[in-house]
Length: 122
Image 1: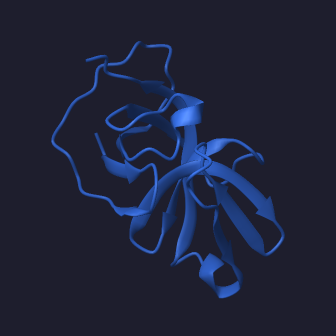
Image 2 (image 1 turned 120 degrees about the vertical axis):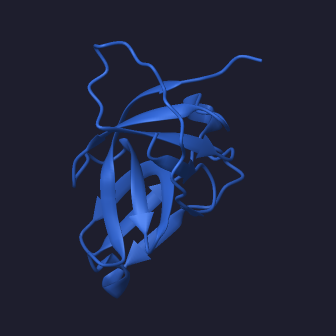
Image 3 (image 1 turned 180 degrees about the vertical axis):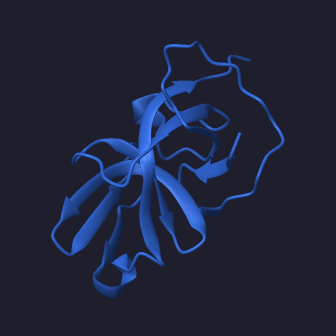
């Protein structure tokens, strides 16, 4: 488990000492624990484990973990030239727009594509 990623406002990633067992057919590099409710309409809930394949680009509309400064968030990513929109899957959560100098690689990166997630049923 690499750490936590926000499903809402970006969250500072803390390393977690946790192991998540996954089927061999999930081709992922890291796992994040989701915090928040911004991705509920994609069936990704608070506490879910999301498996990420590390890659610097995704297609518009794909769900990815993105770093802004030292904070991480899970959103649908849309790239438009010098602007990136990070859209939630919850209509009560505002879109995050990153543009211009905010897109400097020291401040912004697409960490990777979400390839699977596990929900815990209580």
